[in-house]
Length: 95
Image (cartoon, rainbow, N blue to C red):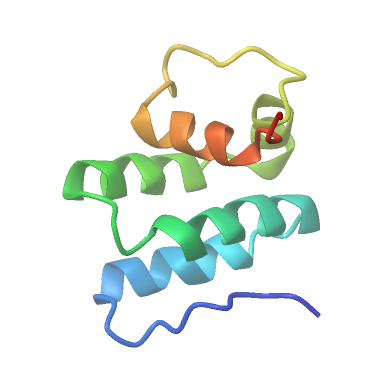
């Protein structure tokens, strides 16, 4: 079973909650995408970015996954800096 590799020690309560929510979405694909993102970024997000991330986590997996995978266009109502960071973390490296 996979899950966070980041210890929540040292994170404030709000970030700990977001880290948990990122790894416990309900859809395994979203657990891996958002959990990995949270492991890498949760400690560095600004207050505004934390607000954005909370709003993104409120989107149901069945609506969010097609956006993250590029199957659906990004609605203007959710396009934000954190979404762009999530999308960038999903892009494969090219050489």
